[in-house]
Image 1 (cartoon, one colour):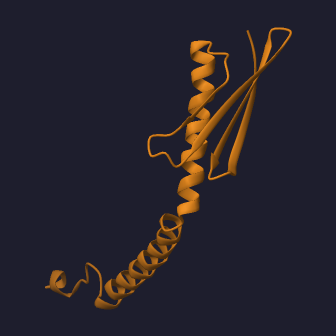
Image 2 (image 1 turned 30 degrees about the horizontal axis):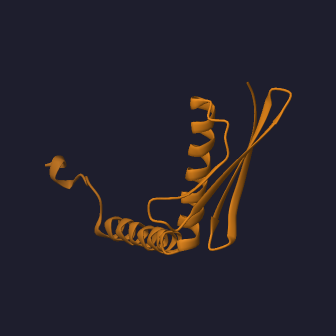
Length: 112
């Protein structure tokens, strides 16, 4: 009969406390995620950084040492690439703009 008197498992209080803690964590995480995903400026900077990095990678991988400018697929970001050469060393400047407002500029020095 000792088997029937042994307590095993969780009590109702422990279960309710665990549910309460999980609920509070879900609320905090959802508020944090909402502020991140509702900020369009953050997404725009992320896309601009991606475009700038891809442009620099393209120049390095394809040896495309010429200036160029273009709009992205959605036509909301303007990418401008300028190459400066000095003694077989190239300086790659990539600027990403939106409506005459510069979002970011990336630079890289590459030897030929």
